Length: 109
Image (tube, rainbow, N blue to C red; front, side, top):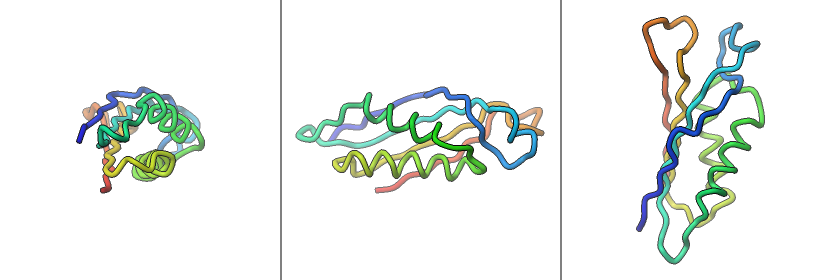
């Protein structure tokens, strides 16, 4: 088995429940880990493309929903992936001056 990592996919998108987050895009970093077998290698650029397309498809109230949707969409289009872990990290979250980021993780087997 192989572990594949895509680190710090940097996106600007709407994410958050605060009013100011509805009119100003946030910087979000996605990190993805998935497991694959050598006989079923997945093209990681297609995983990247699916992650970006899903993340940019709508405005997100919760990072949890963003991370879960990215993970589910990747698994739906890449049936050979048995394990996936997606983190969504908001850089400089609103109203948290001394916090560099807030991160949530979705993982499934």
